[in-house]
Length: 210
Image 1 (cartoon, rainbow, N blue to C red):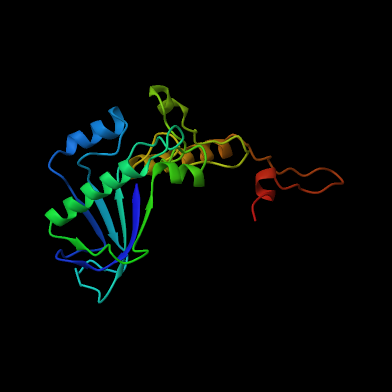
Image 2 (image 1 turned 180 degrees about the vertical axis):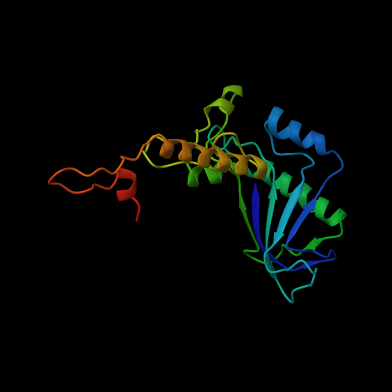
């Protein structure tokens, strides 16, 4: 779940990327993956888009993107206001406990998006950040492979095999490159020969090279 904010932020030296942890980190994963609910004590990530990493304080309101982990169930249920309001209150309380004060009183200062909102924007995702919704233990084995159904189109990233996260996405890039090289190697170039009365012909792979 995300909040797009344009507010004054005071009391904490924000840099470009900030992560605020609550006391019970393990319970957050139980809430999201086992209980399938918004976390009761969730980690809050904030991107301070108008700041650098020198903790300088912008004058006036600034743009912030706040994010908390949530179950990707936007395709199976709506996230009603009482639930999301309670989650927002808990997240803002965590920020205050860490010393960060956000002025949310101004009209239009907060735009909230839930997994249901993201699912409406991107059908089939359930609101997940990394591609299609993954319900059930077999979903891990249904990620797209490196080679797509379209000849010449290869896939890499967090939504394909082996999965999300920077190390996995980098690994998927290596797998896609290896698949591409193997496919190119399987197309043997024709050896150039001289034909009586004819001309030497370039191979198919050479002809396709710009």
